[in-house]
Amino acid sequence: DGNIVCEGPHDLRVRELGTGKSRAEIGRKYGLHFRIGKKLSLEDGIAAVRRLFPKLWIHETSAARVVEAAGSYAYEKDEVKGTYSDKPVHNWASHPMDQLRYYAVSIREDSSYRPATKAATAFDIWTEQDAAYEFNPLEVG
Image 1 (spheres, rainbow, N blue to C red):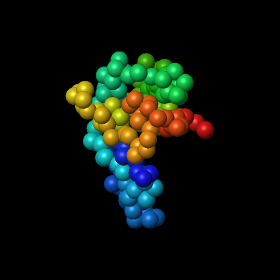
Image 2: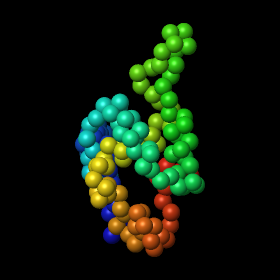
Image 3: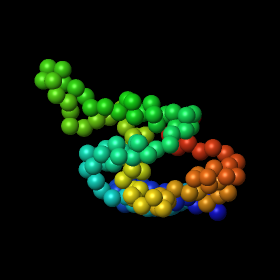
Image 4: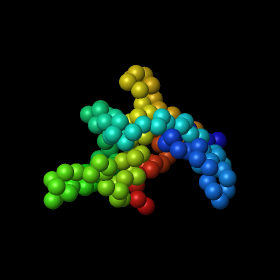
């Protein structure tokens, strides 16, 4: 029926000044139904991604942008002081890595758990059965 259930960041309940609607409400208008994630510190989210990386299966072409983003996601170094900033540089890699961070904090250690990311279509993202199309939210197009 076109409804998609997906993970979302903790701030989806924030109301926009112009419309008075939350981002979750606006998403529902377009068939997106969010499960709101926990609010964690940036450091906890990055740690969750680091724990997740050894378990990830990364598709060579579909997820190439994620791999590229992970390689570009870095802290800024102060060459004079020899220290790094307390937050990663905000650049093109920030959004793909934020998406991966939200995913990493949404999954559970229970291996039978699957995050709510299945589209209500014939396409099953876990088995890739009956795939009429390939969807990659991180692909630039």
